[in-house]
Amino acid sequence: MFISPIGGVIRKLNQVPTKKILPARTAPLRVKFVLTSLPVGGAETLLLNLISRLDRQAFQAEVVCLKEPGQLGIDVSQLVPVHSHLLNSKWDLRVLPRLVKLFRESKTDVVVTVGAGDKMFWGRLAAYFAKVPVVCSALHSTGWPDGVGRMNRWLTSVTDGFIACAASHAKFLVDFERFPKEHVFTIPNGIDTSRFHPDAPQRDWLRTELGVASDARLVGIVAALRSEKNHLQFVEAATQVIRNRANTHFVIIGEGPERASIEKAIEATSQKSHFHLLGNRHDTERCLAALDVFCLTSKNEANPVSILEALACEVPVVAPNVGSISETVINGKTGLLTSPMESSSTAAAILTLLSDSELSEQMGRSGRQLVAESSSLERMVQGYETLWEQLYNAKAAIHQSAPWKRPPANSAASPNLGLHEVLPSQPDVALFH
Image (tube, rainbow, N blue to C red; front, side, top):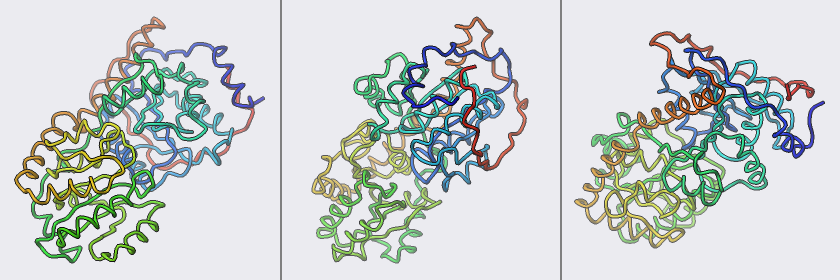
């Protein structure tokens, strides 16, 4: 019979046989990424970029969306198979046997849960019962969602690696979340510096699209329209800037549930013509290259991808001193840090950069250099590939198996791409064999 409640499943973890390592081979390691969905967002874009650059001779990736694939799921499905619709509600227990079956049938070597919450819980629990050799959790934010934190901590012992996206984020995972230090690894977020780069002609292009003067100053934010991104503070700061510099316009890129409240706040400013809500864009690099200042007003962050993208375009950044932002927005060097939740602090920093073009240009150059040296996409991909190899071979050593060796070039078969909806599985799947 299927085990219920979940508490009973957790208590049986120590009774499950030790995970078995697969026989030594030179075939690609089979990696499954587990997440809720793939809407347009920072963590989701990171995953898309990571998958696009993986060594396909060495790693065979697939994505598992517990719910719908999302907008980026279509893009990812052009690269690797995408499975979806395994979870009908937060506590749909059928998701467990569905995941176990999927991992077992595909002989998965590595499971990586992306983000906290239900995907982190179900993905790791299923990986354990499926005897997947390596189980990792990649975390891109701080704190837990309501009601799932304690259960996720219960699964700490079955997790081989917790992946932080910045050094201070790793410290948070150790000090606050109490994850074992020896199992916390830092792989900084990375972006494609060949795509995101300074491009002067885009300044005229975007101003023409917006219908503003060629000498208008542009301040932009790129973030999903969610409450934690705190766009209302961005609007408040913008109104203060406009009072001092009437030729300044504010660009908002992103979509989400807070759009209506943001539009209402803009209407209330009586300066609606200075705001431009562009929705989701596939040409973010062009938009960023056209900005004078990039700004975030988030309540909390880890290592925002949008900041890295702006810096790579040599655009100085104004952002709150929260999370790991200070590792990329180095105050006075690549941008200006502001007091969290204070629109006046944000407005003052924006005005400082708009008033000092020499300082802004210097910060822009320093920002791109920082990203090129420490936050390139190549470095991030190498970090993940190296970690998987090390963790897998550590398990091989425990089980006295030969280590996995990367296969020679051009030896991997092309994956069967596309979107795959996982049909409901029977509730009596045997978890403990």
